[in-house]
Image (tube, rainbow, N blue to C red; front, side, top):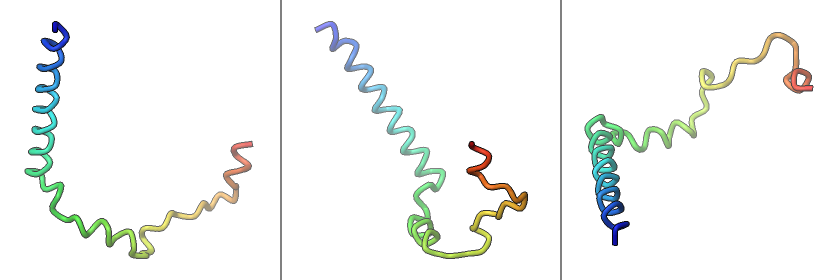
Length: 64
């Protein structure tokens, strides 16, 4: 029974923290553009590609 005296306030506190995090994310427009991120994955743009290594060394030579 004494464990409930600890667990109930901890659970309520975690619920309040989760609610506050959700409200912060809604107010800071985290859910504003849900389709944009999904569509950007499909686009093939030159500026999204990694820059080629111009040093002439290969990564597997550096690891060994």
